Image (cartoon, rainbow, N blue to C red; front, side):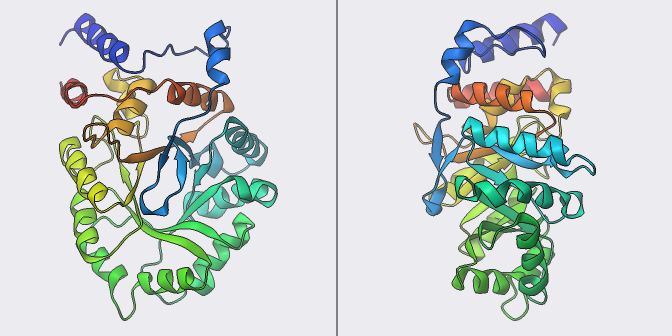
Length: 316
């Protein structure tokens, strides 16, 4: 595909979906943007949690996990909440706890505005409640986590370990849920094979997985991901998308941010049903939040054909 063909193809996809105009840093904000700013961010039901989550969410990586970036991170987090974003994702391993610490600086004042998710790398019951969970809560300055995820479950052996009914991490998760310390249990993974097996073996509330048109930062094809999403949707599992941009590498294909958001939020579409509840996006600076929220407000679902065309485009 020639450069001109690729450019025209992307224009066609964008015009048929979001129809949004990206703003360059420092550009004057056009009049239409002020009208868009008045609109609420669309929300979707997060599976069996019944929580209505904004379709774009704040991720706890990028600036928010970097040492010496407290002020910048607090500005980003507050800006996200001011814009109406109501879901924040983080992990005990992001910046070795830095991300949770920065988020905690905002949570101590604005905890009731957020559905808060964090993750643990502990695969076992031992130490998870007393150490991992307790430390995360201390850093986040809260005593309750809405969704607690077992992090980076990318192979069957690890899945076997966390689901072991004698010593697995899931025992601690259930204990925390039964004590009212967490609301819901889930896993994060880059493998739909592992996620599919997990859903066969355990009644998960949510899954956190990579969804992008290029299959970047994934252990399977975009087509396999879309098939898995339909399986999870049938079980009413909350579906949360990560790595919408494939750690930004998707931009090397010519895909734009509006198309990255549009694709991920449309994955697994079944008629009018759109099972992906939200896309978690890491932020480098506050202006990116403004742009992402504007794109979310203008989002229109992709058809299956449009998604397949984007997949082919990324693989060309």
